[in-house]
Image 1 (cartoon, one colour):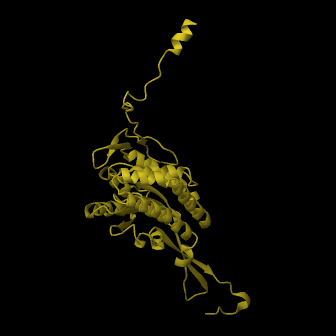
Image 2 (tube, one colour; image 1 turned 90 degrees about the horizontal axis):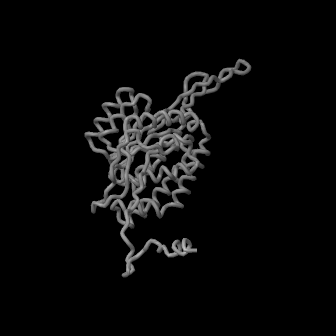
Length: 316
């Protein structure tokens, strides 16, 4: 009985002082991992940096991705490319629409993260809503752009001649520093709508939404490896994004003339296609177009003989 009484006399931990003020506590900062092959590994380098707002407040811990992380992402992208590129275009549209649905259900979180990164509330809401709309826009183009950009070519022989766009392959994307969600979503959506797979380097100064978007992708129907997201310093990673021999194309957004020149020089090693978006207003209608899909397509031309039935000459 004495033991029971002693136990009952133990006072619970105080949640507030005599003035009703709760005690100070250490905030548990989220550690945002990278996203490779449908999983969230820690960076191979073991290095991290702190995301900080304009007032010096620490927002989260972010991975400083390494060359090894990028290589792992390329392997995941190449592995996923075979399945993703051969899926029905309608199915790719369904997947992009599903991403939009999941982002819509978490839009309050993304607005909050943009505000934490010094974006005004009204601008943050606009960017998140446009990101959702942009996913739906490209979902609608998945099964239509080939009809628009394919051709039947006139030839002076007894053949049909068709030109059809096909995905380029593995694409590395350097997302813009500003419009860190909308710019990333715009470049990513155009790439995967056309059947490509991609590795994305998120904004260094405003990275929170990029990794949260990876969580959305993971809970959507996007196969592992179709989209991979890395965080870290552009100066450390851009050379690898540009010169890796198993990357077929690179998209670079708003990074300045010096970075663009470096990318072009290194991409020449394996004749990588370089697409530069340095004058795009992602918040306007200029930030979306089926031509962005075509920037990452190769045009395949096929010749097919016309059967000459009954010996009559083909009509032209």
